[in-house]
Image (cartoon, rainbow, N blue to C red; front, side, top):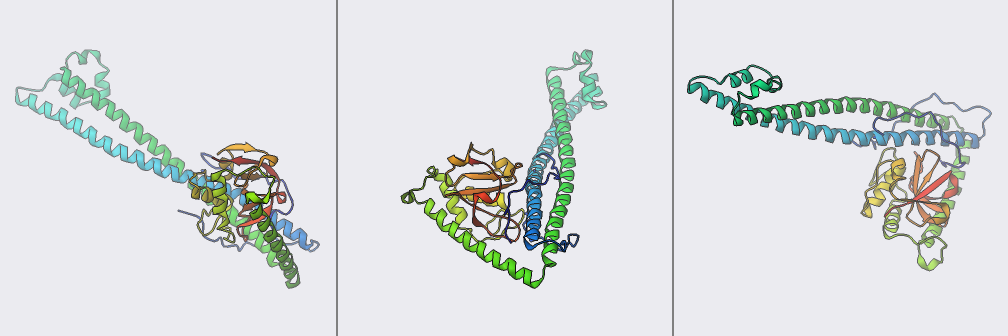
Length: 354
């Protein structure tokens, strides 16, 4: 199925994510039947509508990827806070046990100091707020109480922060469920449209796809020549990291597009770029909008092989520039990693990393 054949403005009816945000790379079941082909639609019209549904699914996929990333961050933050709180509780118990030992020694020697007795029966914060009570403490007792007070405050803060992160995590997971359902709905609508075509129409589409595959193969050969310094390309010379990322991505030609997948066997658009650059020793953010800020922005005439290239006003699609006006990208559900012309989508800018 051809994708992004006509530059179109992306839908603005998008879900938001919290904070931006187990792999969701499993194949989506597409069984929705809410979409239906207009009897007056041409095959090209149906294909364009299917492409638009795929693009809308891709927009939400990038949001899903961000939410998934935030979920992972929150889980790590919560674990760290909980570990710190557990260690803090142990330290607090040690301090309190020390104060208890001090009280026991005083009792054996003739009775409790009134200040210690007051501490053992009330909140140490309230006790320390009484300046007159401080005068009754020895230096050792005062220091012990201050340490207990500070440790209790730290522990309370850690527990409060952990509670806030847990609440946010619950909301993020709810958002993930909504986004996944929306993506599945978009892909289901696209499949429902295709299912209503006649056998003859499917054969026409197959013929068109065969022609487009041949065109993509020619683009691939052209792009490979463009990366050869002896080819005399007018493109800017590629950086070593950019060229390494492009070379890595080229090893995945034919790998299937799967939404939210980051490789090594399947990818979505930003999953491919982040994987390819990781092979070049560069860690990129997960989502396309964040990847746009990972380096220096360049215009069309300044592109070099290996640069990231971004499409649509909301930067919801990303590929890797391959030279001679071609890019290498993971296009859309049902597609595979391939070379394609930069002209098939509304180009915004490139980003040079490293």
